[in-house]
Length: 49
Image (cartoon, rainbow, N blue to C red; front, side):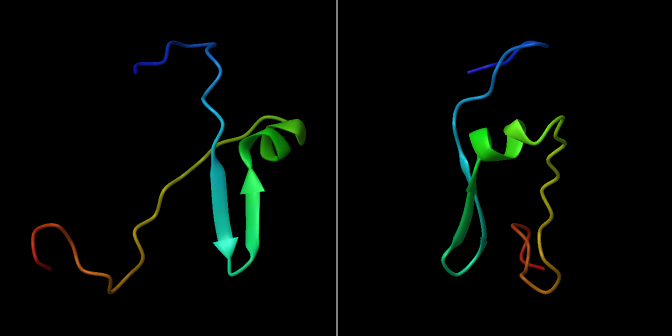
């Protein structure tokens, strides 16, 4: 599913820690939002690193 500029994203949840999740509607209610995905150090890679 491709999104266009101005489209709303489907509902999702961000897991921040054990028992600590945030829904996208809660996040967006606080104002403009930028989401960045970071693969943690030392977790390996799809290339076997």
